[in-house]
Length: 267
Ligand SMILES: [Zn+2]
Picture 1 (tube, rainbow, N blue to C red):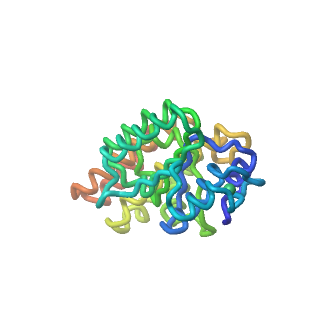
Picture 2 (cartoon, protein in one colour):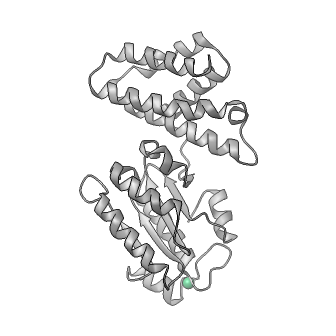
Picture 3 (tube, rainbow, N blue to C red):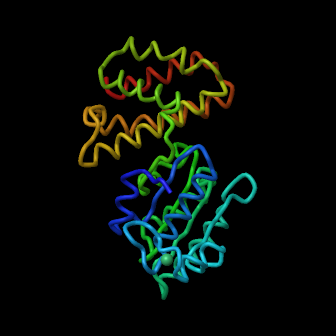
């Protein structure tokens, strides 16, 4: 199993954060990675970030009967608040006795807002010995409060999606105080109505990633240069514009207004 290096290192060192979000385009690859990590966490004899594969925890997990692993998948189109409440009850109970329990939430980006708020309480005060593994194709749609409490890792070798490249360019132009460069992004931003929401999501995601990098030991040059206030201000603008696009606002006007609103954060 090929995990991102930083993730593999913290797993091997036994220092995995209590809440991890795996991002990727392939649901099966995300599921495999989440189950592999879960196996490492429940294994009785893990070796250098690898499960032993032969202990009772490993073998029962392989056949889907390990009581320390709980997997939540979307119920229809969404992960619903009732599902997260059931998960919360199980997590609270587990803190009474067992340790090393793992809760996987597949399709975490399909959680309803109520479900996310219910999960948020758990993430804020996690029961001891419990790890949450979330998987999502588009983490940018999650509430910023949820995103700020998970460690995000991207799976897969593919380069950044075009939406992320545009979002990154947008942040760069803002940080360079390049107003005309910024406005030149408007045609790409508004090229297709069906892509506009993905551009808005990507902007949220890029801001979150830059904020995380900024707080870390070796931020990229852009993360170092970007004011934290800018990264905090852009996602609400993007989400409001995404809403307006869905209500059939004129896309070229909306895109221009969005860029100008982003500009005005700093100027
Ligand atoms: Zn084992």
